[in-house]
Length: 382
Length: 229
Image (tube, rainbow over all chains, first blue to last red):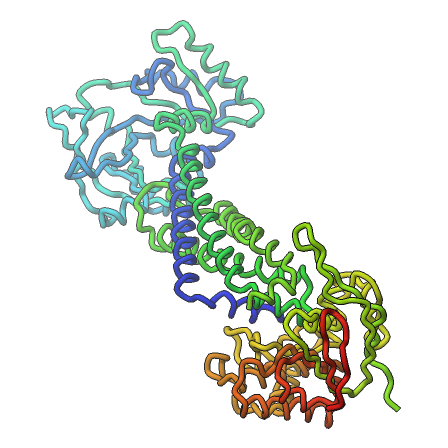
């Protein structure tokens, strides 16, 4: 600790250079934070997937609906505890740009299978009582500045209603949150009965089924039992774990994790070069000063430590600020309205490890050079 | 009766310059008593600075032995020599070699970072050293805010703050005007006289050498003559 003052003062020997280096590290770690949060958007749903939930959908394509009669048959499979269903509404609010997910669901079944969906009891009752009402996720409520009780028109690009129009009118019965900060609350839940009776075609079908099972260890067996039931029907099914379903859905966008990793690798490599160059320059300029320290009795290892501490300080300041601002943007202010856009503890921990690693890697070669300085040669450069 | 602080016996130092071997010190013997103020003079390349580096444990002889106090330096490891320097030697350079990012006070405290003293005690001792060199009112000034003479005084305070027996000065007045140089030399003389510091000073300046108790002339790696100051 007694060397901290010396390290700190040496760091600010060339203020402008140090500030510019810190700024570049700041930008790199801000980018790291934002990309990690983006990774959550694509990979988070797989992470959040419950190991005791299976998803059954049409074997050919998710856009093909399944007969509602499948519900009871799936329920009868051994090991299946609860079954919910959902159907894609495919609508937008006022403007085609305002796209978000809307599912037509059976309220009781849906909330039974998704206990992480949190809703006030009074609002839940109101949703169940009122057929044309919807339950809306918190983020969506805030994004459109809606209030409970508002009536909102939704335009469905898929479902024409029986009056021949594509605009459906709903009342907001309540708002839901998730028990996980990464949970998706940019979602609208419509009452299936109201939707099914109101649509002009496709009645009596359901988009997909969500199965709550008695143990993750039985998942493969139960999935097989479900699919076997419908093996010879016109609507064959494909049942998989929720995580596998989420991953296959995400893979439609390409390997997002790989793309993000490649971007981050490029950023870190650049930062290492920038900071390493700064530290090398700083040591080169201070060779006589470092020689003086050694003359006074500072050990080789002590000089190595001082240079390494300087480079780690630069990373800690820049990286810490970068991650801090990323947390502010993503978690505190919520400036990016994407479902699941969240910076979790694991990503922050990973960022912290990268900061320390980058500090040590950027400083190691200049530090070794400083450690190996011969006092007499170095003093002669004064 | 004074005892011997430094005993150099049959010291030689050879450097390899390309394919050629250059002998800088040749079978040199030297004894320096405790409390002495010795000036080393001689032409460039005569081996004065190499000899000073030997005394400070910055360089090792190719052959012969260097004893300072009770310590034989030629057999010490690099880290043992670092520890030894911190406890026994004060260095004063021609160009002061202060750290520009630290105030005078913090520059003087530098050698004390290697001790177990707490921050308060370090500050107290540094303030005392600065008052000995007459710069207590410049403690919070950075080197760029001081004159050459004041910088050298800070360097002297840094050299004496850990209370070493031996002060090694390499051309301490080489970068100063006559008047300031005299002030610095008087200060060194006072440290020798009043604080019993043993001083070895390399200089080209005959007037500076007059402040020493003894003057040794070197030539081609050997001691040529001893002149009474």
